[in-house]
Length: 427
Image (cartoon, rainbow, N blue to C red; front, side, top):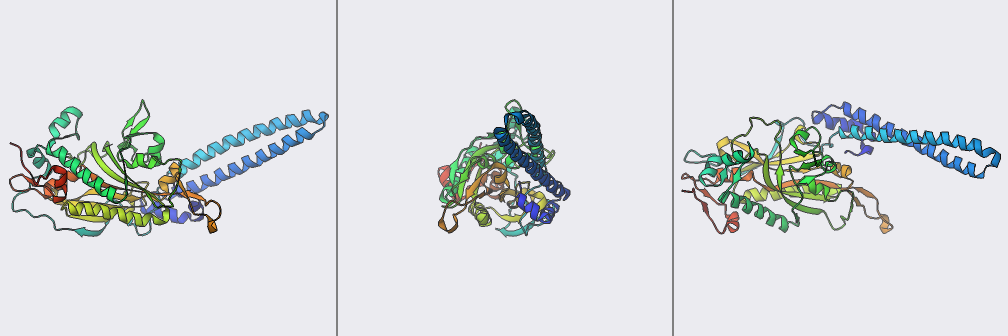
């Protein structure tokens, strides 16, 4: 949810942000009016409550012969107070709905437009060249005994798979490498629940126009998470954090679930776009002033991982229309996939500013003025970013393949695989 003060003071800024995202600026006018109506309803209620309290004192002090009339008058006033209270509830619900239609305010400099209007910030590494016809990740994975799509489909349906043998070991090795890096960078490891309540899923911004991508268990009214960003955002819900010693940084290791609604016919081969995968997600709570610097730090951690894995990649500044409701800016790191002759997203990292924190009521206390008394509470900023995930196997296998179908293990992963240097096809 955006800052209501910003909406009142600078609605044109909010409109420009909506337009950059490809959304209607009319949502801003609706929210401004809903906010005005809510504040007016609260004022009316408070005035009537004050009048009711004053009237109660008059009744208590009135002569006996005047009490009956005053009591009758008090009943009418009490009814008006109840009606005013109902009006406040209705106005607050309307205001919440109107505010929910406005996505996070994009940070200045974010490119406008949709999915194809991103800006490439930098590239790293040479595009792999082979003296033979490269195999795609699924063929390599099947030869290595690492990926079994056929049995995944038999057991669970399309877009499911088994990672077997060296495939399972490779994913665990990659995740452990990421976890080691996260620990070195000061992150606290967490294995979170993968089912969350509606208020948590809604609070993180995943129940808007992309709600169809989220799995819902109707009987329990719980949602399966598509990223541990969701439970990690809810971890400090309704709390006041102490950020005096710096940001709170967490690394969540979890299985993730996505329905991939709207992706019919896309990436149906292999494990690029699947319903279930594992991911190590960085999540940070910090002050709004420190958020952009923290964002760059997350990108640096991601790039270092891909560099050490020997992958060629580019970093893009995602256009406003492709951000998602919560993100004010998002950087994607896309690795080169040889058989697709294209860069494909391996990681993303988003600065959600105070948008999620306002929805989830997560605040921090500012320093006291002149060292006296307690400071005010303000919403924190939240950020998230991938540090390892199943999809990375695609780029790893294709980039490091050899003509005989074997795959060289990146040196940084070898300690996590018992010193294995080459993954060999099975007989």
